[in-house]
Picture 1 (tube, rainbow, N blue to C red):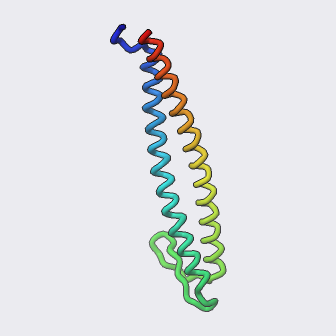
Picture 2: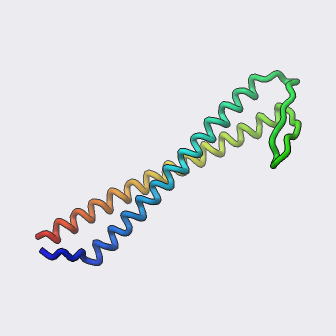
Picture 3: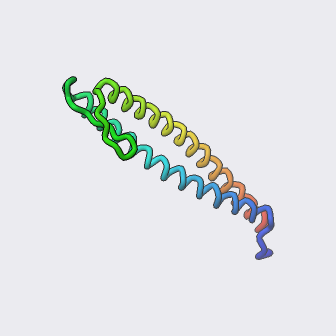
Length: 117
């Protein structure tokens, strides 16, 4: 048996490593988005529990601006919805990357098995 790894297997190993890095990156993005979504949902709950005449301030850049409850609730609902859609998209990407990772692993194992013969 030769100890030299054929170029095809080296290429597949490089692809496997790249897919693994993509999976890690997506996992980090997903965790950040989940955190943002939970934070936004909690803020929305608090907003909805406030009285209609409550004084609310929104952050715009480095400023705090007085805002009405209805508009602020609408913006928070929109933000939660956007984050939910982005999370769904990242989850689908994660699934595809996971399948690709498994597929590459199997191809490499099969090629290495054939190499041993």
